[in-house]
Image (tube, rainbow, N blue to C red; front, side, top):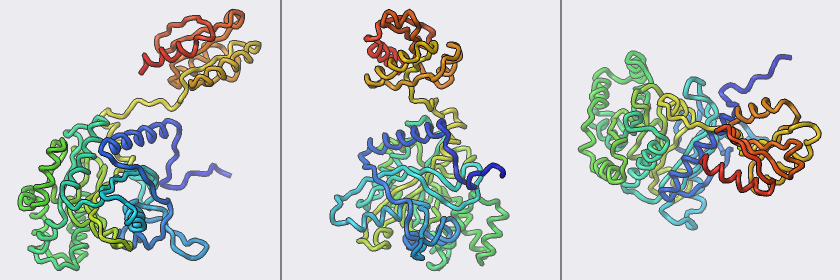
Length: 424
């Protein structure tokens, strides 16, 4: 029997991969809490009907992992979190204090073609503001995104947050003579503009029965970078975002539509300024979603950011963090077989003092044990040889500087903390 391969599009998280995921969680937590957002989460499994309510046919029919449970009900591995959020808010509307500022970070699944920057299993930061109808609320979310990019070392020259308003786009389509029932399909076509070649985009437009005259009007609409000045909401949005320090990251882009059907107003995406990758994050206003899943209407806005593209972008610009997967602060080496018990006791004593300590489980050459610690980025090593044991002492070696010192065993915990503080 050959080796069993992982499920296509699923991901193995080796310790170094998990270290990045944990780091990313901490970055999203820090910036979310800086703006006053509370952490929450939803279930990994939802009824398929929840997404059918407003997410759009492509997500439900093509991108969701769907299966019947033992009772025959169709269940989906969650492809996104916003419908779950809307359901949760609708269920407890009277107990919740508005406005809600909630954020989450967790796993999601979409049945897409795996490629660079896209997998079928991914982790995603979701952040939402519910209960405020003003475009200033949308601007706050954009400011959170800008603060995050600044925090992880991505500048406005490297990342752009591109903004549009679907209501402005609706008005533009109406002037082009597009009937209301045709607009969702035209929006989806517009949303695919930057992912298709000119020939492929024209071919798709023709397959949808869009005339060459209308296509020419759409192209002119997508090239007009000043249309936002006629939108009161976008004017308020950009002014508020500027006051919150996010202006350098923002620009108006009529190509940003967002493909999900539940968006109702301002929408935005963050992209690599060089255009190499797909969207880093995306979201916008969805005022009708809570009512679509059985609750009272609540004005809402939010966005989601996946971990895969962000990781590629950080690597591209040399902003990826230097992380070590080992949590150990100290390695207690085994000097020889005779001193093994004393080494175990020393490790146990240091752990009792709150330090993160591992023990090398065999009496191999000292150089090999120290090399092991160095490769894992463990900064300190404790050595207990016959002389140290006889004197109830130990030798503490700083693997970063190469310096070492002998000191009483009772003083080891305090000295280790001093050296670790220098590291920080």
